[in-house]
Amino acid sequence: MLSFRSELENLENPVVENDIIDLANKISQFRNLQIDDEKFRSIRLARGVYGQRQPGVQMVRIKIPYGKMTFRQLRKIADLSDEFASSKLHATTRQDIQIHYVSLDKTPELWAKLEQDNITIREACGNTVRNVTASDKAGIDPNEPFDVSPYAHAVFEYFLRNPVCQEMGRKFKIALSSSTEDSAFAFIHDVGAIPKIKTIDGKEVRGFKVYVGGGLGAQPFLAQLAYDFLPEDQLIPFTEGLLRVFDRYGERARRQKARLKFLLNDLGLQELLRLVAEEQKALKVKTYTIDHESFDAIPALPAHADYGQVEVHDVKKFDQWYQTNVFEQKQKGYYGVYVKLLLGDMSSDLARTFADIAEKYAGNDIRVTVNQGYLLKFVTKEALKPLFNELNAAGLAEPGFDSTADITACPGTDTCNLGISSSTGIAKALEDVIRNEYPDLIHNQDIKIKISGCPNSCGQHGMAAIGLHGSSIKNGEHVLPAIQVMLGGGVNTDGEGEVADRVIKVPSKRGPEVLRSLLDDYDSNSLDGEYYKDYFKRQGKMYFYTLLKPLAELSTVTPSDYIDWGKMKILLWKRRLGNARE
Image (cartoon, rainbow, N blue to C red; front, side, top):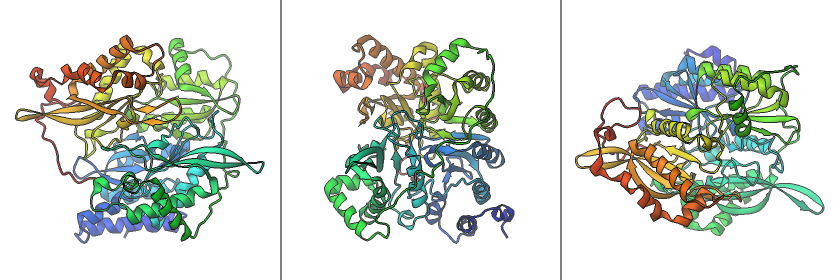
């Protein structure tokens, strides 16, 4: 007898209900040794349940398609984090929200309660189509040809529980950017789409510039251009054909080579596209028209209020916040407002406070951003000052969104089995350095800093101007926690991606000195107006290797270098090889 039967009765979708019951049954079979570890691992991952570093508890990844959620959904996630997890919400670089320290046996009940508010965890992990991401500005971007939100939603719905993508050799990632600025990073995805309008026979036709085969990880590949213009009704059929080719021809024996990028590298683009065209002949769906006109582009707005003469409590901070976190939407008279979060973390209490504030001043459409923040939409000019005052009182009005001072980092060794050294600890230390020593960098949108706890690039270090990933260095009989420094990545002014180069590995505790050396060097030697990636190319990799080499010197190691960020005692590190990969 299921202990959460009442929660299931409140669901309107029998498919979802059966899915949750099936997970509960599979957990029972696993507990009774009727399913082995490897088979059960595949099952739970496809249901968003990921084993943590800490034994006996799970991370649950909540799928937020293209980062869009309502105030009610945010409150529900916060409430369930209190009931089932650690009372914290972690926003990810794939616009998901993760909660931690969940009992495996409680995951079906948690899932059932999420589904009551149309929130799913299905296929948030595992060898499936992962969360479909999109530009957070979609629908309000002044530079967009059209709103990609309905297309992202259609792709999400079409492939959710679709038999074609349930047992693939590896995960598959899709992103839609709102404009050629490529703020959703199409160039690092298996399928990346950028909206485009083309005039055909005197009519404007919607379509997409489509890239395929991108990916980061230990071996980053930039996506290749598959179509300069793919009509909108071909986006889903093409993607399904590509998925079938990936499923049929992709690597399965060697996990490290099982992404689409390796298949593309082996076959070549033209052969891959030929195979996709052959697969499409057998599809039931030859065209897929997306009804974008019925999509609710403008969310429910707050009731009009006369705010009167509002006095800003911190004028200097308001000015900085307005310059760095606020932009005018394509809908005249309305503004988008970004909320910068340290490491993408928010307590459940703060999340509820945030939802309450947002509901007073913004449209009912919160977007999780790909750099672990949040976006509020449809804020009037008159509402900006009272909104700032309330956000600031809650600690949510820090200026510098998506600037050098806004560091992206995965959870790393805090909770992840794959973490090698702490990403969150060093991220906090680097943000302290910037805040205290380089405060003007809140205005710098060029130098992005991204950190991952291992080479897998959940923190997207491979596409950062300054990227760091967790590693280790052997020093005699002992091993130090370390960071691999990568430089020169990012998105150029034409919206094209560039992968960072590996430069040098240094002890983690020297990360702040690495940052100071890089920033001071750039300030002293760059040309006027020179972007950091261009400066890196001009100086060359060896220049930066020589610059940072003194910080890699092990003869000067002190006992504190053996203590990773956030650790309370000396850890004599050993490299963890051959871990089971999730």
